[in-house]
Image 1 (tube, helix red, strand yellow):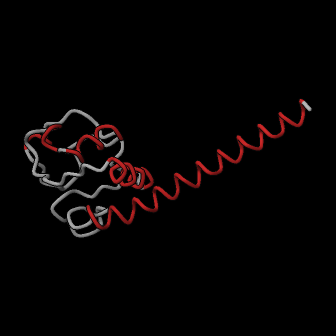
Image 2: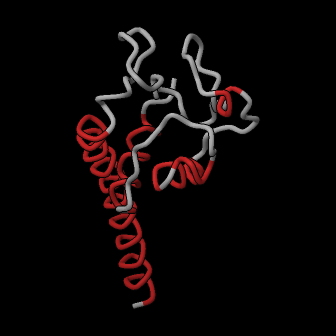
Image 3: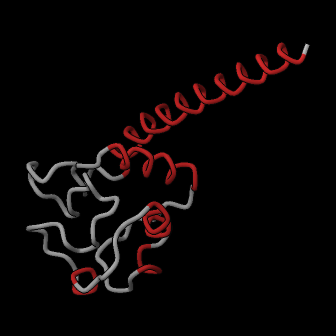
Length: 127
């Protein structure tokens, strides 16, 4: 009986891990569609693509803000001394000016689930 319970617990744990992995992949896939729809007009995912209003966002996680080569950032972003992480991106997407008053970005996203999905996708676009 004890062995059966342990087997059932292990099977449940394995199933949960597999579902979580699938869920993370699904979230990133949904995030890609959201990125294209909501961010793609201003941002690309590669510095090789023609520049748009915003910098390319591949490799954004861990990158120092305002330092993507060849992009004309606002004075505030040029002087930033912090790196992008998930929490800062989330706050930025709610209200960029609450993070940095001197920014050109005007996009705001109040839906936490949409932000989570976009950030999940951006995490897959690391260089």
